[in-house]
Amino acid sequence: MSDAQRPHFPRLLVTGGAGFIGSCFVRDVLARKDGTEIIVLDKMTYAGNRENLDPVESDPELAARFRFVQGDIADAAVVAPLVAEVDAVVNFAAESHVDRSILDPEAFLRTDVMGVHILLEACRLEKERALKGERPAAPRFLQVSTDEVYGSVETGESRETDGLEPRSPYSAAKAGGELLVRSYFVTYGMDVVVTRGSNTYGPYHHPEKLIPLFITNAIDDQQLPLYGDGLQRRDWLYVADHAGAIGHVLEHGVSGETYNVAGDNERTNREVVTALLADLGKPWSLVRQVQDRPGHDRRYAMDSSKLRALGWTNKMPFEQGLATTVDWYRDHADWWRAIKSGDWKDYYNRQYATRLATSSEAGK
Ligand code: NAD
Ligand code: TDX
Image (cartoon, rainbow, N blue to C red; front, side, top):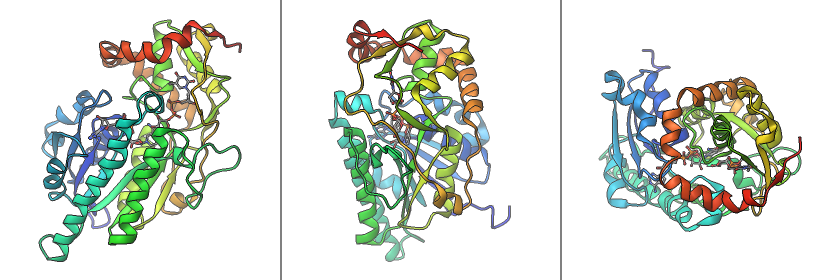
């Protein structure tokens, strides 16, 4: 392997690595076979799923460079010794669902703000150890953030220098987390980078989010609860592209900088639903117009020329990525049926029972 191909950070702590995007990052980085070793720290909330890491754990070569630890990023006693072992921390761990943040905000503050604080403190301790010569360098810290911190963007595209105007408990907590990260760069001179990704979709996506919920409901001929007029706009980013961008920023990002990761696939929710129903061969009559999400952000859109200038490009066109995703859910019914059982029913009823009972035809 040439020096150019050798990773700068060969030992990684990946927090939230049993979730949707984190597990894709772990699978893809280990599959590069460049010698990188990964420890995953994951609390295994309802969103964590060990099966997402099966492709790693069932391959002896990949498994030899992988370790799984169940624990909370907000628990300093768990976090500190793990951070001491690695060259970089990539923080995917979060409560990540806007609707759950509206039902129950507190868990979001604990993980998305306090958890980030605990991780940063552990990195700061390691920086002090590096200064004393007890380790070669301080760890790099990469915070995985979101386009939602910009708030609803009616026109144009958000740039990294724009102000943050989060509007849900989820996005407010994520904004708090990344502002803390920035403060550790300014105050303690720590090596930190932040990514802000667009709405991500693809295989292993928990079925509480729009695309996997609607695909799996439609497979079972269940109703599809479309919030409000369905004309909200999102920019869709394929999960492997998002994970690749995070890897790129980890390797090449300038310390203290933030990078937008856009998919450049802006669609209304109606357009997304139309496309996935066509892929599934299911009728629009499944769609119900239901009560809107409170404070629903109308549109997200970002300019990611800063990341492109760093050498990253987005590969997956939306229609192709969506068709691949639909096929994956068709082929992996055991994976999502296991999630859509047990506690899922309580959540689903809390979120949708009244909405569906008072819904109307969505009209095409
Ligand atoms: P996810 O909900 O699928 O996974 C989150 C993972 O974090 C789960 O495995 C969960 O068990 C773990 N976790 C939660 N709390 C934890 C804690 N206190 N300690 C340790 N582990 C904990 O989320 P995702 O969609 O994969 O998102 C990953 C990250 O990317 C999040 O930070 C999210 O804010 C960000 N993001 C997501 C999207 C998206 O569209 N999904 C877009 C932009 C940014
Ligand atoms: O049942 C639904 N009906 C519906 O109309 C659901 C679950 C969603 N929607 C709408 C709301 C949004 O306009 O679909 C759009 C997408 O909703 P989500 O999948 O819940 O995603 P969003 O709220 O946009 O947030 C996502 O993208 C940014 C992720 O969940 C965040 O973690 C990420 O930061």
